[in-house]
Image 1 (cartoon, helix red, strand yellow):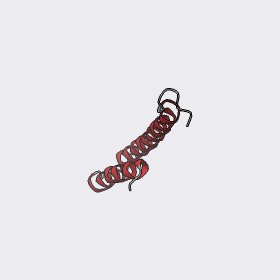
Image 2: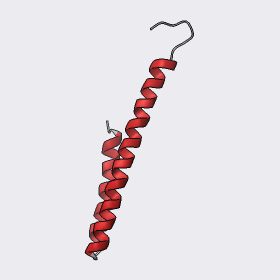
Image 3: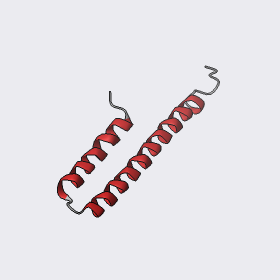
Image 4: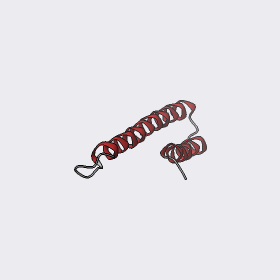
Length: 69
């Protein structure tokens, strides 16, 4: 099973490969790679926070009224 981080890495590595293949100017290429790295970090953090929120929500509010366990 894939984790969100693996899926994010796959998509972002594809973007980097496109930049490496089609962008010839080194300055522009460097800037685009930096943007892609920033997007990767943001997406991983957002996915991790969403999973944590979901887990906590289910643990705390996913019970029927009166259920103790």
